Image (spheres, rainbow, N blue to C red):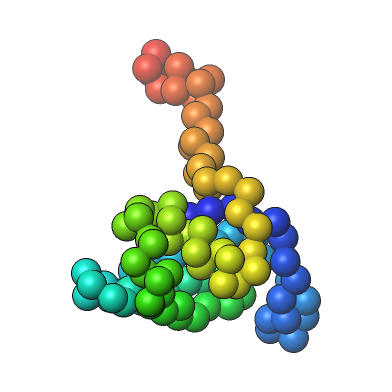
Amino acid sequence: MKTIQPIQLWSDGKIQNAVYFNMYISYDNLSTTAVFYYSLMCETFDLLASGKIEMTGSDYQNWDDSNEGAYLYAAYVLNLVITGDYIPLAPVIDLDALSDEQTA
């Protein structure tokens, strides 16, 4: 999953900012065509938009088969600006509570 420059989308009767971009490959014939499904999500990971992108012809031939290349291609097609990789936050550990449990 990637972070993107926020884009405004109409969803559930209001304008919301999409800030996350996720993709997965659905089909690749290893010769001429690949199909990707994508989703755009807000900060709470609610789905705002989704769809399918097909890569064919010279775009497929020039693709280096990498995940990064697929993301860059889809971002170009969707007019998105990727700002980085999504890195989930580490869980917060309450050290005081952990210490209390060990001494009990």
